[in-house]
Amino acid sequence: MKYKARLCAHGGMQTWGENYWETYAPVVNWLSVRTLMIISILHDLDTRSMDFILAFPQADLDVDVFMELPFGFEQQSSDGQRHVLKLNKSLYGLKQAAHNWFNTLDKGFKDRGFKPSNIDPCVYLRNDCIVLVYVDDCCLIQKKGSKAVDTLIKSLQNGPEGFKLEDEGSMDKFLGVEIVHN
Image 1: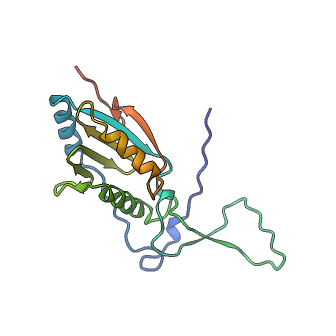
Image 2: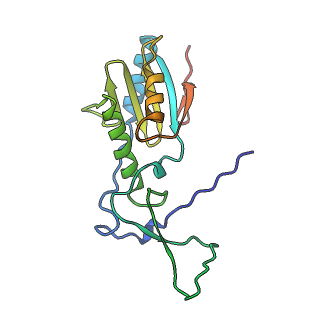
């Protein structure tokens, strides 16, 4: 059995222009997913799935953000003052968390020679590999027998960003859609 807990910020208390500037983060278009899945089947390409673990806290904040201590946390202040936390990384619940994460991931792929598609900014292209990004889930496509995906995954994990991710192996489903090869 696996238990999870996440510290979430109360983004409803944030003010535009003070605590955040941008919230938009693109996700891959389903037309791109279907098209590239069909191409991978027709050309007998390898597909792999990758999931970033606790993605949003892997991104730095672009402005200073403070939050009150979570409910249940006991303050040990002799002078009765309230304490706040200054966040170093994005948290789930922050309005700009998805935007910060996408920018971090975008920079990581560009630093490794990928270029976003002109049609879909969540499709990253390189001569030996294609990556589809949906928030923290990725589909990777490469030629049969190529080591491009293995090299990319190791680079993401061991690079300056130190991304924490899980290589989920060969794709049998992506974002809840089951992929069956007939």
